[in-house]
Length: 213
Image (cartoon, rainbow, N blue to C red; front, side, top):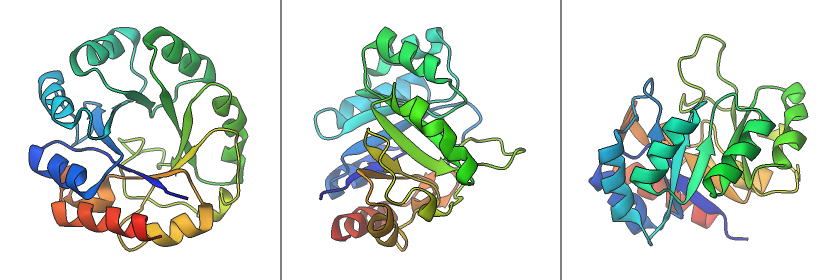
């Protein structure tokens, strides 16, 4: 089984090139003003053009309305939309139909009770991303460097591919893959020197560790 690797929150050509040259399957661009990884449409369009054909470009949004999504789709032409907010299953289905692109829906996991939402999202999304549930006071829904108990989703088959995220880094990704057996893994803060400041060496190390798992 080849596990796909997504490097999220890229914001410079140097770090994008590190991800592409190391063989990342997906690169994530963030559109959420509260995030230190947030990009303008113009900057994102340049990065997306650079990655086109080498990796799938994923646009991450948080509870974005149709106007915001249309602006991203028109300017950046992402291959995939990632919905990382409190979007309902109905909203996920609506976005997928309206914009004609595959959708990854993030599901925040803090305990077994959170698994109740999985079936509803699996029915309408192309892939589910399991991320750590943020604290109620957290400004960001993801990218906080938090891990969750991966045993909660080990062996879980929702009927669509699963991407594992939340607190992964070069030292932990292989063990996480071995336990959960996801279709893909995703990292953002786990390859950063500081919030929003990606480290090319850590990106390469993460991808190498995931490939060796």
